[in-house]
Image (cartoon, rainbow, N blue to C red; front, side, top):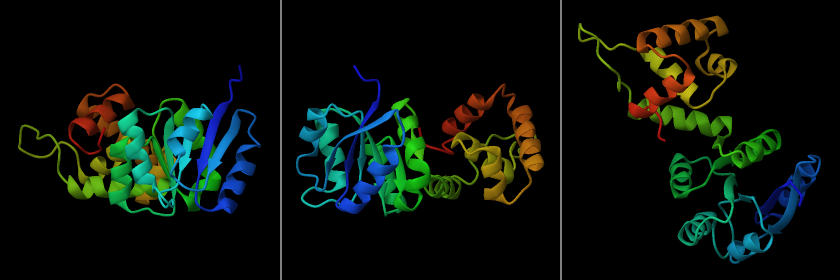
Length: 220
């Protein structure tokens, strides 16, 4: 039996499907086993092709991407779903993730991220392209500007900058990405990280992620 990741593509533009197929075929670990230009029979097609990953557009004729995910959720997910959409509206992002999607990419970043996204999702992780992660981050810090512990003097243990950094760490931003996002040097990022670890008595990054989840800086 082949150990390749079996992928089904669903988009209403054949030219995009052809482009993604060409890109994925260069990876020996991937196999595109089917494609669809509407959402009406996607569930049956995915089962028939024994697909591991469905790359799904939101804008689909007959049955849109959100309706497709709802159908998958009600019947039991036969595969994992990555949304690939021109939309980057936070409301849509949150809705499809709540429904059970495992990843979200905008079409602008598909070329550089789709391979990484498929591999990550197949390994049981969630995946967001950078622009989507930034939207989630900005929403989290805006909605929860001071979800923080107090010290003995009644002051917040973490500074606003440290809250930003711990949120980005929890969203799996690299040190370089945090540096670029916050316009600070890599050395400054590392100094903040060490200060956060010391303040929270955290042993590793997993502890920081748990703190961010507990304090609702990000959603599980």
